[in-house]
Length: 123
Image (cartoon, rainbow, N blue to C red; front, side):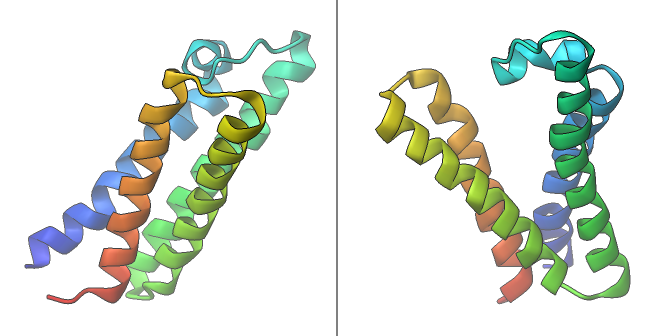
């Protein structure tokens, strides 16, 4: 069961690390992934700072929680991802349904479930 726990924490960590690293150091590669059109250097800076920073801060929390055996950090990241997911749902309701929003929403919900599962660790 320890392997299941490691996967429940490790998979979201690696996923967020990849997104955060690319957002921070190659923001123009993320414009298509995020359906964004940054305006000049300021727009690229926003991708680096807000998006990359959010993802990399989440990675830092997950690693800290794993290394120190303080799983409350998983809840903090689950809350962050939950608010992101709520934002997607608000967008669907306010802006109209577009199918492109559903896959990332599902991924966010799966990551939330994995992190909360690791926090409660019933095994």
